[in-house]
Every structure is written in structure tokens, then in C-alpha cells.
Amino acid sequence: MRRELITWNEVQQLIDRLIVQFEHEFQAMLMITRGGLIPGGMLAEAMGITHILTAAVDFPAEFANEETKLLVWPQFIQFPETDLLTGRRVLVVDDVWGSGRTITAVKNRISAAGGNPYTCVLHFNPYRNLFGTNRPDYFAASTDAHIVYPWEVDEGPDRVLRAN
Image (cartoon, rainbow, N blue to C red; front, side, top):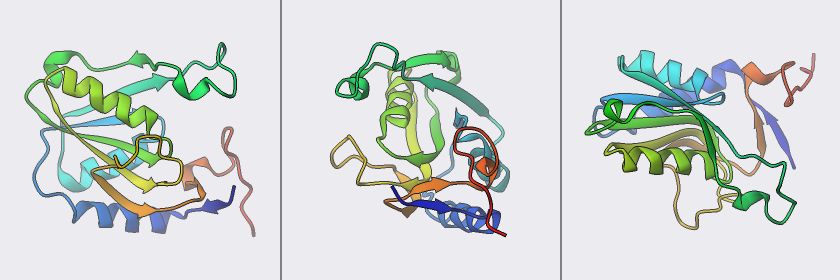
């Protein structure tokens, strides 16, 4: 798979593209860890959102093989209490919609709690999307590449050495 390294300047441009898309105000933001923390923080600051929540989701793979790993149910490691979501327009932020499993699981759980979720990502990959015609409500760019964000460079499993 092709990899694309994004700079901080490009991240800011993506944030700027998102902000002009929003049709109304949000009463809360839910950032999906880890990928949604930095773009969510940037959006919250730019939009003046102060009701900030986080969700941590895992898809356990220890019992799944290559054919069934995409069918594994999510495990919510951390999720806001229902009363923090009920009756609120919630902007759900992650860095990328690849398969769409994580953000869709979060969106469904917010809906079940009586919230009104809107999904938002920096990058949408329609070629990996497992949810047919469903797509993020807001996205800054569409891609077929594996995106490496500046906060991932020289860090963690997606480590990429910068070209000098």
C-alpha cells in the first residue's frame, strides 16, 4: 500500500477545510483515541467547543483469523456516560476512516445513548470502507494511501523516518 507523509502545515489545511463544512454548532465533541486526539483538539480550539469527551475502542484479534478479524465486535475500553451524550449534537472525530469500523461503532453507541452523532475525519478511504455507501459526515480529503501524520513520524508502530 502506498504511504503518504502529511506535514503539520497540511494538517492545518485539512482542519481549515473541515471547519467550513459544518452547518451548525455542536454541543459536544467526542475524540476517538488515539488518532482523533490531535485533530479533535485543533477543531475544538478553532470552534470553541468546550464539552470534550473521549472514547477508546479496541477490536480484539487474538481469536480471529484473517478471514474473520473484520467481523470481531468492538470492545469499548473507555466511553462517556450516557447522560453526557443524551440530547446533544456530538461531533465524533478521528484521523482517518479506513474500514469505518471504529467510528461507526462509536456513532452507533452515541445514537443508542440518545445523542445525535456526526462523524468527522481528516481522511476518508472509500476503497477500504466496509459500510457500502456510508461515509463520514465530514472529511477533508479522500485517499487510497496509508496516511502517516506528523505526530506518528518516528513514533510507534507507524514509524516512518523523515527524508532529509
